[in-house]
Length: 219
Length: 412
Image 1 (cartoon, each protein chain N blue to C red):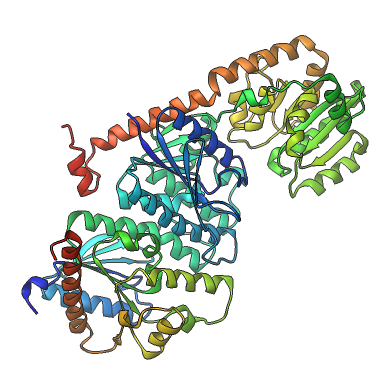
Image 2 (image 1 turned 60 degrees about the vertical axis):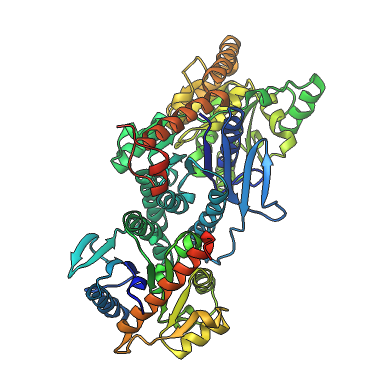
């Protein structure tokens, strides 16, 4: 892998980050961010916290906790949709200032912004799928079907998806109709998770650069 | 300078839920006449084209029901991501200078677009949830209230329809008045000035009352804040002095059964007619055969029905609340009575029914005020001034995309 293909900047978008822990994803994001900074990749984490917001630098990782403008909600689903503008504001603030090569989404709660913005974001877009609505609650209801549709529509906007398990991978292929080439099995508990992800980022940067060159008509 | 404006409104004619659709239509049509390009992004409905040019206004529709939802509020939030996606398609095709959002229903899309485009967002706040509900009593109402606040804070500038609304926004959200401009709603008064032939007038009058009866009319939704119960309370005192009076309540709403129960309890059923929704073709004739139009609301951010009454040359009596207080100059362009006071309303009805000079003066002055204040031509001019000021401020501000920073060099 040549040095030029190293990502300059990465945004990790998550719904949990230490000290907030809902699932194992929280610590995985933290370890990945640490690994990236060691590789001299400028790393932003944009996340949500129940009780605080603002930006701080923690061990060279720039962590932005988005504000919750709509604290009263009718359901967890409405909470997620109402957080979308705050994630968007935080992401564009970074994109305006720095070169970002990869935006990596964790937790389905961060996905809704991809429905409108998917094609407008120049950086490579990745998602780590530790679950899908069908693994969380497979029963059919307007609520569950709505979340599934949000997932379906946003997953189509991504360049690459990492599935945490074979079960999730199967759902992505069969029920969400995601192209098999776009999905890779990468368990979160893999001790080499961060290293593997970094290699994937490098490949994605290479791909994105190729795409840009083709677009410019250089090739 | 001609501006390209992207307007977000969940309703647009012929899909109408409230007064918002007509407002957006009348305003955008007039802005086009004044040389600006207006693109409306709005919800589709069965049979509607995805795109059409309506009186010069570009109307872009999208399927707003693609994401299932258990109820209306969640549907609205889901609809916003679809609206935002559609808007981005339009932005990629046209060069947009300003985003103009109408009400909380499109807030999430508008705020998302503002951050992506780094273009100024203007919001028209037509009313507030805390006013519509006379307080906030459940999570849904609190959520809407917070979305309204979020939109107001995120907008570069806000437009409100009355001093009352400005004050409500100011005190509700500790929001500075200089970030709000009052621009009233308008009325196409020429469309309302229809004079019926004697024969038609008699025909329509008979639909509602005996020929010898004078008609005191109400039109609007039948919901508590419209104060129809206060009008019912005024019926008996009026009938005691003027027995040849008929009270007609046109419109529908969930409060109708309760209002009919009150009419029965007061033993005035024979003198009060509930018509339900008026057919479109009867709308103007209804105003025309009415001797007085009453707007007894207890909450009204603006009160467009008062303008419609004025435009049809029907003398109006309104409650001294909200935007109605600003539309009507007492005994000059209409009559004002204290809100929630049936006796005062009855006294005013009697005064107006018995004083022809007063009625004539009110009608004449009301038309004059419409022409000078509530003409869409004038309202569009006020709106353009806001657009222009905001756009000029933005041009001189560093909050832009990298491309716009190159395109619009800051003067300083």
